Image (cartoon, rainbow, N blue to C red; front, side):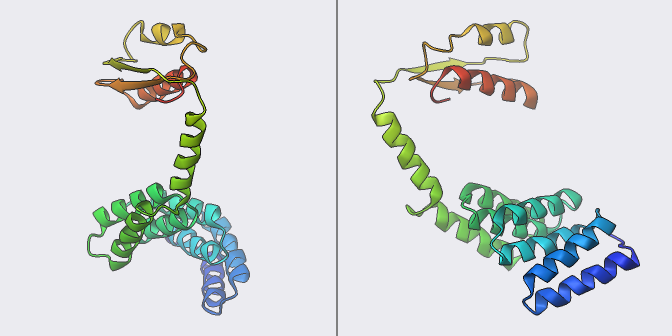
Length: 205
C-alpha cells in the first residue's frame, strides 16, 4: 500500500493503542492514517477491528468492505467484513464474505471458522433473520388469500418490455405474489429495473 511516514506513524500509534485495549485511541489514530493514506487496505482492516471491539458493527462492515475493494484477493478483509456482518445480524451477508474469502485463501482457519459460525447462525431460530421471517409470516396471515402468478423470460432489456412492466396495475396485485422464471435480462441493470417494477405491483416477488 506504501503509506507516507506520517501515515505509518499514525498506524503505529493505532496498533499500540489497539494492543493496549484503548480502542477509541486506536480508532482515532487509524482514521488519521487513512486520511493520509486513503488507499491502504490494511488501515481499513485495522480500523474495522477497532470498530468491532467497540461494537460498531455498521462502521466495521464498511471498513471491511473498503479493504476488500482495495485488495480483493486478501482473505483478512473478508474476515473483517464477515465478523461485522455476523455480529450485526446479517447472517447471509456474513456467509458470503467468509465463503468468498475462502475462495481466495482456502487454507485460512479464521475464514473457515467464520463460515461455520455463519452457517450455524443461519440454522438458528434465534437469529434476527428468522425473527423477520416470523414477523412477515404473521403479517401475511392477516391478509386476504393471495394469488400466485408466474411469468417466464421477461427479457426486460428487449423492446417493449419496459412499457409492458409499467402497464401493470399498482393496485390489483398488492396482496399477490409472482414468480419470475427464465431469462429476466442480459444485464444487471435490466434485472434490477425489472425486479423494482414488479415489487411496485406485487406483495412478493
